[in-house]
Amino acid sequence: MGKEPVRAEDLHRALDTELSKMRSGTDWCKWMDAAASFPTFGFGNVVLINLQMPQASWVAHANTWRRLGREVKPPLAIRILYPVRSRTAVAAAMEDALGSASEKQRTGGQIEQQVIGFQVGVVYDVTGTVGPPLALPPLPATASATVAKRLWNALTREAGADGFTVDIRPTGDASEGCTDHKAKRIVIADHLDDFRAVERLAHEVAHARLHSSAETGESASVLCRGIREVEAESVAHVVLAHHGLSFDAQSFEYLVGWAHHIDPEQPGNVIKATGARVVDTTRTLIKSTDRFLKAHRPALSSVPARPLGSVLIAPDLDGPIR
Image 1 (cartoon, rainbow, N blue to C red):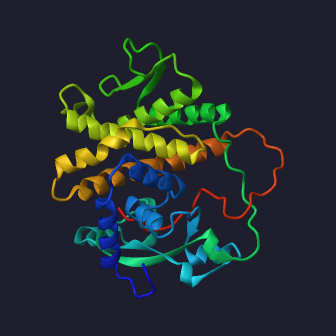
Image 2 (spheres, rainbow, N blue to C red):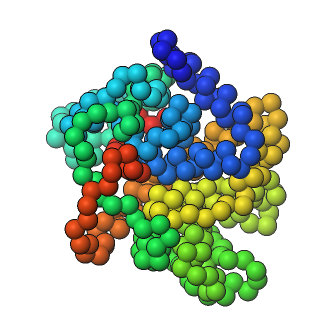
Image 3 (cartoon, helix red, strand yellow):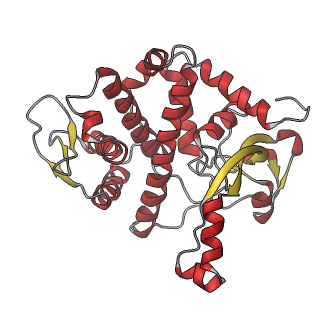
C-alpha cells in the first residue's frame, strides 16, 4: 500500500482489483485459508489482509496487542475497512420509545443501525509487534481422528439447532450425503471414514443454513446449483481448516467461470458476494463450534507454550467489512 495516506476509496479499489485478478480455484482457496485464520473478519478484510501480508497468522488492533503486553511496529501496519454506522430514523424512534436504560436492557438493547460508509482501520500481525513471549494454547493436531469426531459432534449440534436431524445410512446412489430441506434431514453416507464424514457434514450443514430446497433441488439451474456447491464446500473448507483439518475442494475451480457467466462485466462482484455469504456463515459456525469443543474438551496434560507467530486464531475485532 505504500507509506502515503490511504483512503477508504483506495482500499475498495485495491479489493476490487484483487478480486478481479482471480483466475483459479487456488486463488479462492488462498482466501478461504485466510478466512480460517481470521474468523472474526469479513471477507473483504480477509482479502485485504492477505494482499498486504500473505504470511500473517494472528492479526489484532494495537490496543489488543498492548493489553497483551506488546507494542506494535507502525511501518508494519495492515489497513482494513471499518464500517461507519448511523441510526436510522426508525431506530431513533424506537430508542426514544424505549426510554430509560433499564427499559432498553429488558428489550436486549438492540438498536438498528445503517452502514453509511467506510473508514480506514489499522491492525497488526503478531510479527509486527515486539514484547514478552505469549503463552498460547496448542493447536489441534492436524488430521487427528479425535478432532474429527469431536467436530462431528459439534456440527451435529449445529444441525439440530437449525431443526435438522443427522442420519448415517446408505444414500442409495454414489453421493456422499444430501440435505432434505422439506424433511429437515441431513443424510451422510455410512461408508465414509471419520475425516470424510465430518467434511461432508460441514458441507451439508452449510446447505441447511445457506440454501433452500428450491436452490438445491432439481428445479434449480445448473449454474445456481454450482454456486451453491462452491458456497457449501467453502464453508466446510474454512471450518475444517480452522480446526486443523483439510481437504481438497473440487468445485473451487469452477467459480471463476460461473462468476464471468453471471456478471461478464464485473465478475468480481459475484466473487465478493459469494465470499461474504461464506464468511458470514463460517463466522457463526466457528464461534459456536469453538464454544462447544471448549466446553467438551478432554482433560489435557500440561503443554509448553507455542512459539510466537504460530497462532492461527485471531482475537475479536469490531467492524468486519461485509
